[in-house]
Image 1 (cartoon, helix red, strand yellow):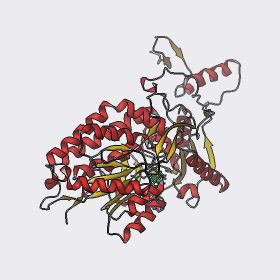
Image 2 (image 1 turned 180 degrees about the horizontal axis):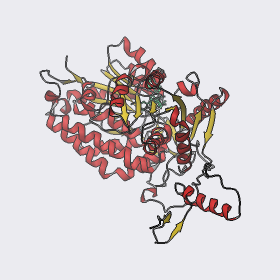
Image 3 (image 1 turned 45 degrees about the vertical axis):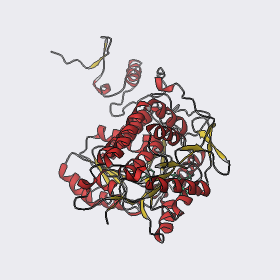
Image 4 (image 1 turned 90 degrees about the vertical axis):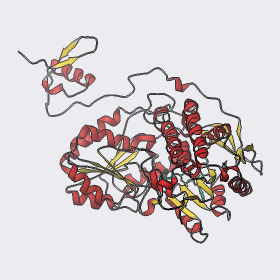
Amino acid sequence: MALFRGVVFLDGSSVSLPRSALSLNLPAMAKSKTKRAKGKKHHAAVEPMLEFGDRWDYAPAPESTPVPLKKRYPLYIGGKFVAAKSGRVFRSINPASGKKLTDIAAGGPEDVDRAVKAARKALAGPWGKMPAAERGKFLYRIARMVQERSRELAILETMDGGKPIKESRDVDLPLVAAHFFYHAGWADKLEYAFPGRKPKAIGVCGQVIPWNFPLMMAAWKLAPALACGNTVVLKPAETTSVTALHLAEIIADSGLPDGVVNIVTGKGSAGAAIVDHPDVDKVAFTGSTRVGKQIAAAAATSGKRLTLELGGKAANILFDDAPLDQAVEGIINGIYFNQGHVCCAGSRLLVQESVYDKVMRKLSDRIKTLRVGDPLDKNTDIGAINSKAQLQRIRELVDCGVAEGARLHQSKCKLPSEGYWFKPSFFTGVTASHRIAREEIFGPVLSVMTFRTPEEAIERANNTCYGLSAGVWTDKGSKIHKVAAELKAGVIWANTYNKFDPASPFGGYKESGFGREGGLQGLAAYVDIS
Ligand code: TAP
């Protein structure tokens, strides 16, 4: 029986195709057939280009219905929503339009001082005396309320930060709830977490977080601190403060005693005021390595406990025995998830030379399918760059990559005319000395390099001042173990990327910081077991 070579469509119709076209997409196949029919020479070795992109329009998702924002967001101190002492506010911008979303209270040192006093008072009050199991109940309650309001929170996260709704809805919000649920379970089991010790709360924790996962970073900080009986003063990033203040509403509605959680929005100086405040017992900072170093210097003489979650320049290592299609999905997820605004982004791709051409071809084809645009559209893969300043930084580093001799490849996708956008891009011809191989771009830009042997891959991967994360793609379990054991990175994914779980500790080596968030190790950062 003759073998049918063609495509059967879902409506039952079919079309026969030449053998050379079987691995290609339909529009391209149709074209190559037409050309041959006109008698043009057919080069079997040259695969026609795949065409994707703007062909399809999808109906909007229910999530694209806007959520009303308040005209002005106050601070949350001592269980009350209050204006900044100075009365000042700053504008929060929707990065997808460049237009103002709302005004946020600009907290300063005097507001931080009020918040620290409220947190200290709460420690001495009902919170400090509360049985651990009761403490846990508040965390369970907050987790459930986050779930109930997840649609609203996901939309706000996307409007405020520019990330695609499918990510805020399917990744950020579930992880926020999961962190509260997970730590709720630990609240009354700390003696089992640290057997033989008498774990106690540290005291008032000052927490400063970045803009790339605003609500998730708030949950990563608040949940373990509360589970261990501490009180908190939290400062969200300036460009993404809205969801932290909606979380404050949830916290207020949960009945958590006043002053246990205080949220002070404001500029970097408000973060510095938290770090420098003499009555703060522990500082937990997530952000850039530059600011992390300043905080480490400030904390060094103060005796405060400190954890730092800083930047990264992760190597995603692809061996020639890896399942390449799966690996390409991991590369795409590794660098283009959240527009590349990810501390653990797989921003350096190391490909084994023998599969380099194949991988580059697959990667180029896959990038063409990425939809860039309205973050509230459920089909958008890449949303808006978080701020004008971040867009400028990405452009500067990309220009530098071109000037230093690397080759820039970019999707041809159209970008919206308003707001802050950058096309998904990758560089080839990158050397270890290029800035794009050394510095965190924090945007949708991948730097591709090659290697020949596992030893060379390890050496190249470790050739960075960072050490937050890495990826290994290979069919061989033994190779995974050998390579992972020699990589200097806090988190290593094998044949996958960007997988997070509250039970799994996350954190870095070297200039990526110290301390862990999540799991038992994350709890240890919030208890005094001396
Ligand atoms: P930063 O500029 O360092 O800002 C982080 C936070 O610190 C913001 O709330 C910021 O306030 C505040 N801040 C600024 N200057 C400060 C100072 N002198 N003292 C205390 N606080 C200060 O980082 P970013 O641009 O928001 O975030 C991106 C960085 O975070 C990247 O490097 C990324 O890799 C890192 N990150 C790391 C992780 C982990 S887990 N390692 C996770 C996410 C992000 P303003 O917003 O008002 O400036």
